[in-house]
Length: 102
Image (cartoon, rainbow, N blue to C red; front, side, top):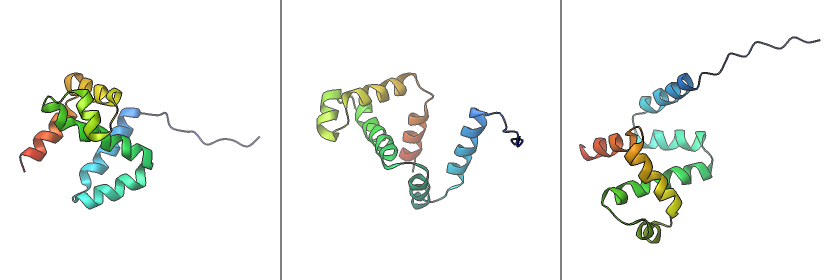
C-alpha cells in the first residue's frame, strides 16, 4: 500500500493570519481588487461588497427596509451586518475610521 504524506494539522487562526498578512502587504487598491478576484468567486465578492455597502447606511441610522430599497441588499444581510457592527470584532469600525482619516 502506498504511504500517504503526513498532512499538517489545520490551524485556522494561522491560516487567517497568513491571509491577513497578504492583504496588508498590498499597497494599491488595484492590487487588492486583483487579489480578491483571484481569491474569491463572483458570488463571494458580491456578498462582501453588499455587506460593506450597508455599513455607512447603518451608521447613519437608515432603517433596514430603506437600505434594501436603496441598495437591493436583503434585510437579513443588513441585520447580520448590524449585529456585527454592534457585537463583532470592530473590523468594520477600524476600516471606516481608517478611510475617514485619509
